[in-house]
Length: 67
Length: 184
Image 1 (cartoon, chains in turn orange, purple):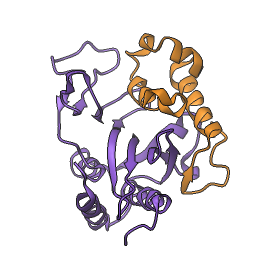
Image 2 (tube, each protein chain N blue to C red):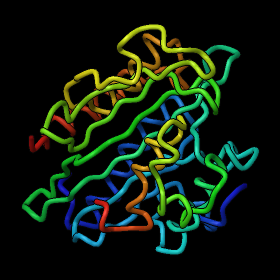
Image 3 (cartoon, each protein chain N blue to C red):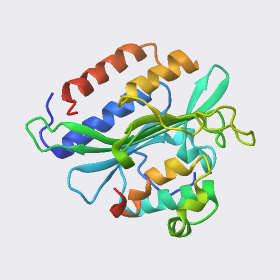
């Protein structure tokens, strides 16, 4: 298992701020090979990656100015 | 039954989305509150038993006969503080992947420049292959698609194997709730 989220293994789970940030950071590292911070600095660089649209959709998990 | 408050409406909505997606995948549903009161991100996550490696955390596994396909589903939605605590989808992202590195199709609904085609789909190029026609990566207009239709599409057109014989009645039931509460 990649991230330490949903430790209680709930079918319906509400993410804490820490879990949301961990989920996003680990997803970016897994599919783009950089940290969330690096991705957010220059996200255009990753536009051709097939995972880009899904990762971009989840940016509000770490940056609520993006909603 | 009408939820008594916003929290109850959120849980009920998570439950509905879970029922829909569990027609094709062993799935849990995560929610994350926005800084704007009443708005939430929703993430379809694989149930723990489906997590076999790091990448599997971020995909639902769906079976197509003996083959395994992958699905991602996210929504951004609002719960209205009215008598029935209605829910409105503000944005969605649904995608189907034959391999975890190969996107087959994705359905989007979100604001766009010039307000064109908020609802649209993309057909991406096959990795390592030059685009074979001019619609590759374009915004192909769609209506706002209920998630039930995406699951129906997977079962009836893509050939995904349903996990329950009752998938049609389940989708009809949850979609009726969506239609009754639809705000736009």
